[in-house]
Image (cartoon, rainbow, N blue to C red):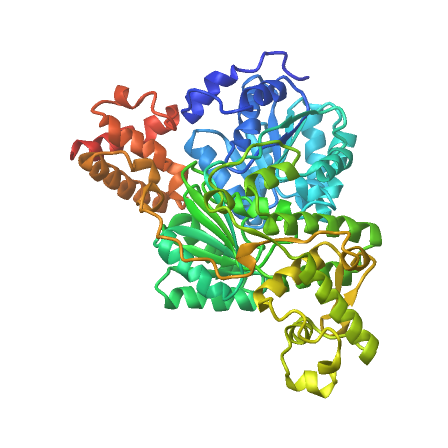
Length: 623
């Protein structure tokens, strides 16, 4: 039978085990609710402290005799690092995945069945196997099944940006273990995805905790794509030389090419995509997590569950599919709360490619319509001339005021009326199709409109059209901006089956009649002026956490980091799992001489004080 003992005080666990004196944001009510046995759906931004929302209830309920918490996690690397971090804090934790041999697997299973493990991490595929379910049955019969935590819960939704069918089978947890509380957690879910999570995981009665999606330390910048790789190089050289970062590209070949270009320019860059050997991918991910200043160039195959706190920038060389994906990926920057950048280069071909992928997918029309709507929201964010953050938060239903930190707030763009240019473009497409009976691509249409007598214009006799040269006052950059917005709003279509030719739509009529206004950023029409190099501040210092230390403090901090690196290598863990930079900076500032001096420093729990206190004092004594 389950124990009737009351769970331990969460605040006590927070301080004793994890070394923190206070909960952040909505953590306290979430922890209290789940510890008491309530179901919960938690939406909290990356870096907001989601893990503690189930780890502390798991520890509290285990201490009260309630047994094992099962954490459903989609990634092996994440399991390894989270279990390692819990061990460092003195918590009994384990994982079951393919990295274990049969003997190790059996050992973990025996410990689980004896109720010795506080948190057990496993992938959804394993959790729903008959073998694992029978083991959960045994725990349940003896009152030793405490809690289910479903991490990255957006994976259950077909509307989410990272849908994984195996998550759908997790409905069995509610059906089979109705009395066991469940907490589902995600950093990214719009209203549609949220509703799908609730329905698929049968969390209709669960209490929902929705935190602010705002990440005020991240500066959002979206630039018009001209030569994206060169633009990226300039951005890194001017803003983030020597910093850790992630660069997202759409194709494997592009990943390889960009990584090589960055290496040639002196950056410590590594490629990551599904086409690489699994051992190479793991090696690159381990280096990114364990070394400083690595730039990972990757497809979206990389990133979920990455807990590295000091990623100073996330760059997109190709546009993601939707705002959820963009928000999730950019959220990997600045988890330590220090200044970070989300930078994206965006162009006409991005719009064409994303539209084509939706139209050519084998999905049903209802699904395609939802995906088009999500893409439209991202295009609207990219084309916006007002605050990016207001737009981004508005997508998730959160009202805000201009941030003063995004590119549009820092350097407000001029806006020009592109309505007349749009009408002339659409008229030209109409006349060309009327005369030739076939469609053409964007380049040829712009040549006609601007009055350029090219070989193709001469070949098809398009110089005689009434629209030839009527748009000579517009630059190619301006017309590309107009095309981009027309395609984004559905007033123009791209036929991927016919060499990306342009097609009029029902939406073209309102623009042709002048009923729809087309407003564009001035930056679309002319190259942006070179901005002055941003002042080197804490964002480009060796560690923002240590920026306020004096010279002796900086030296002490550097020595502590060197010691931490040695310990991390010995334990095969990322350095931040041992101590975060902020903890080392606090130690360096306090200059402790006794173990008592270390007590109360954020991030030093009882186990870490016992394990590392003497070594820390030894390092500090040198100064």
